[in-house]
Every structure is written in C-alpha cells, then in structure tokens.
Image: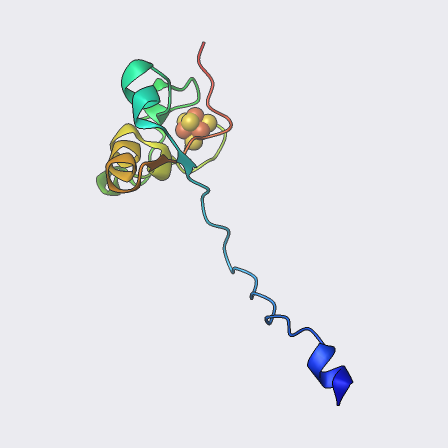
Length: 95
Ligand code: SF4
C-alpha cells in the first residue's frame, strides 16, 4: 500500500505535433521603438517577389525555398501588435 502512495504520478507524454509550429520571439516594446532592426522578408537578400506562386494570398517562397508568409512585414507587425511576439527568420540576410 505504501508503494502506491509513494509512487509519483507523472502526466502522460504530450503527443508529438504533426507539423512544427513557428517559434515566436518576444520583443520588448522599448527595443521595438528604439531600434530600427531588420525583421521582414522584404528587407532580406533572399526575398523574391516575382518568385511568388501564391501572390494573391500574400504567401510565397523565397530563393532558398522558405515560405515568406509568416515573416512578411505586415504579418510580423500584426503578430507584434496582437501578442508582443515576432517570427524572426534565422536565415534573414542583408547585403
Ligand atoms: S530567408 Fe527568411 S527572411 Fe529571407 S526571404 Fe526567406 S523566409 Fe524571408
């Protein structure tokens, strides 16, 4: 009987996501207002507005094959206004 009392109950493992979600980074409002930082596909060297098969929906692919939709300026600003978080692309490059 004591063994069942002492046994720790652990929660069941979280099911694995079918598709990984984008990790959003928190941006402090002071930093957002103070710094003119680069965060959007439109500022990136890999951005290819003409290589955009889904132009009407605002999505598309850049020259290295990533979906630009979550990293576009408009989408990032909307995300920041709603949650204080932005989706920074780790491959953003400025020449
Ligand atoms: S590398 Fe990242 S930031 Fe640059 S265009 Fe592609 S998705 Fe956008």
